[in-house]
Length: 605
Image 1 (cartoon, rainbow, N blue to C red):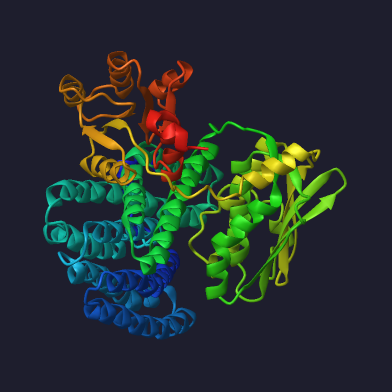
Image 2 (cartoon, helix red, strand yellow):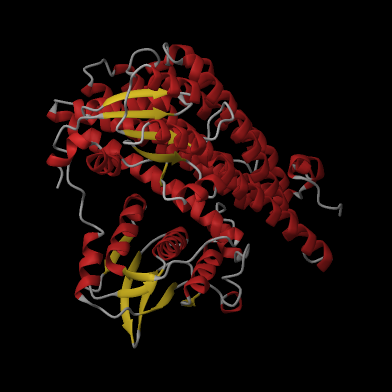
């Protein structure tokens, strides 16, 4: 076996043809499962866009025909899946791959063309915000498939080329006024996703090859595992490095939706806008969870032990999975403690552990139910997840928390996992000083649990736990005052302008230090200055903020960034400057402006 090389040459070391027919068939299973699942959910993604276009008083016939057509395709794909499973059981792996690989490649191409057709239907006929959200949704679909369709890389290439290639070509029609700004983002996304999918493809190939060669030599097994871990590290590093660029459009979208909501006078649009706001919040939580998880797996996660209420966290986690359980006819139940369960834990690590345990339970439960419960155990509280899934063999239970380990029956049921979910739970428990365990009977189900030290209840802690889940007050008063915003992204500047103007704030935006200083020279006197940290001109956002506040001693200022570990941000916080992270919550920004803008003080409580 050759020595490990950089990820950019991984495809030269191992190819699909190098895998045995049995391994190729397993890779085909993974890709086919993802295709079927992806096609199944697409019409449900299209329904909100049909409703939104209807609310805009536009003709929805084309979009409705597209959605109904996809529902018909879903039925056909489900019938085809039955034949696929029959052939996989009847044919040997070589014959199954020879017969079904061309079929799956055609499915992937047709699926990609179907998504591009959605953009073609609405291009140039809907508002900017509508098209922007559509492109963001398609980008999220591409990112998900970059991992789970990549076992057969040619299938993903056809899907991505048809779908995102079509979107890119249609950009001048979809964004007639902003296409020259959107087009570079589309091309840069192609490069990012291609690298991400290549790494994921290499990871899947090496996983299969590792299992095939593990019985040969222990040394070969060690080296292949190192390569798999390097691939995972590269993927985590990609997420961390790209976090700034990924957060930019989400940051802008949150501001634009809040601006539309502020200006909207049509009551029938309020439910749709509230759903959009909730979607942006969910995307924000997903980004934060991905970055937090990367810190855990890189060993760079700090631990903040505090009093945490279990019941609100359990309700939150149940909300994330309730729709998936309902769609699969799995009975999802939650048994709360009545508000009594307070534990000493890190809220982020505990929430990530709960999510991973629920994900694991639902993944391997094909019928029956899943139960979340909180139970008192002496001086501890125990969070438990019960399922009626396939269970775990007694010989495998000692290794189930090990990285990259998946029992054989797990591969047969679901090929999407990498064997990391329970390993992350174990790491989180160790970081919090908690214990974890399981009881399982093969074929009957499993019970996983986390045991955490109970916190001493007090009136203050009860109040704190309750306050964490009180919805913020709706912005009522119109603000006044002047703000200066420095950001090199035109989309983000436009979003700032739209949101602050909707709140009644006089706003000036600049893309560089020269533009910002020019505004001050022209007589603009801001009460608040918001400066992005990373500017394309190479200027330091922190140094620019310091210079602007020196020119405007009566103004307040804050750094805005999509990064978390920048030395400049750490220096700014040490020197007492306010640092805000993208995507910035409009509610939090409104509250901050109520404090900073002098004309708003009398109306704020």
